Length: 143
Length: 143
Length: 143
Length: 143
Image (cartoon, rainbow over all chains, first blue to last red; front, side, top):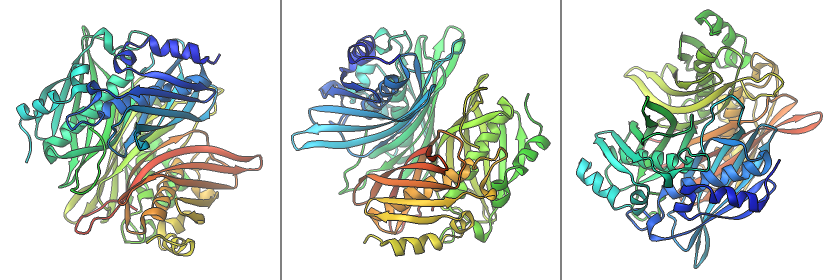
């Protein structure tokens, strides 16, 4: 039911938006997933920091992959909350998500987003969200 | 203190990530902002729907521009919650945000994200978040 | 399938905690519900304002009743986000919730919480949350 | 600047609503706080489970005390998100909150709420929220 790292990486590669952003799946175990996004000019906002929308993409997708590691691939993300803590800059973003609780049908996940800098990782945002198994005959939601 | 539509559109154009996504500011008044994003292949996930991360980007940025319309340009987004309601597909996303409450230093905004389809607009996600005026001498947060 | 005001008020009266808090259902229509809570000493925190936990209770329950007005009585609240805007004091709290979107199985609701004062109502908090129809054979969640 | 367990317990005891609910502070260290609430009839909803509003009160207040352990006593809670996972029943609720990130002025905290049952603790809800130091000359928010 659950996915291997290779299968999960294929799923990520099949998402055109993740390719546009440049996200890579750098860890995927039972209950955890890490997305890594090299920081480049196209991902910034007007002050030279990584755009908050990149961080929210990273949270959304890392949460979803962490949920998929325990629920299997047929899931939808119900939603999430994100809190921004510090401006993100440096060489790469790392979104580390873990499943805090999971049942047969739903998983609650949390995610920390770090910016890797020359002085080490800096925690830039934290998120919490849920994903659910898709019901047959039901129109689901996102990502 | 507040911005005109042209000034706000310049701010959006100065965000490389918004250019990468293809977002345009299509409404900007005192307390409200609308971002429109033409849907194209690069914004999708693996099932052919718009990626949840595009919706969360749209929520983040529409909330921030709605807050900026009442607080002025020197703000940071503190965070937001987003709930996904339906898969997004069609010709364009529209993220319509309004300021529900604002003081001198903080604004609470809400956002609805519609997918424009040949059968009319479909509500795909809803969000709520806050933005604050940047304190001098304080390191702030996102976008 | 949906409830009348009298049936909904009976449900509220059957909640011992709502009786302890002193909540009354003062409006209940298709897609909206209002809870009113007279402010008294026992609901305050150490500075003389209404405790944030009373506001979060009001949000939780108003959201749930608004969802129940469209989904029927067999629902569970999945969760919510609340933002506190101003200290609450005065004669009564009013939590006004509306269903923003609803399907067969889930409703997204929003809620504004006002404190009624001698100078009129003051918006003190705003919330957004979801409730779902209980699946048979599935262990659900809260209130 | 930070509080001792005894000072924090005095603050809790000075909250009339916390006395009404029956909350006790059972742990308080640098960056963490635990609230314990004996489950009794008055805290239930109509199906015999602890009311979601009690869980949200517990989240709000545990988050605030965890933030106070690093920021000092002059803080306001900005808001939080809570996800309900399972119905709460048993002998007591325990809300365990920790500060995930803190600066001079703001702390991000997370909280897990367990129901203590004869079969051990059951995770019933999880929350994430922020609290900020009160600015002089500024009207703040909640609890």
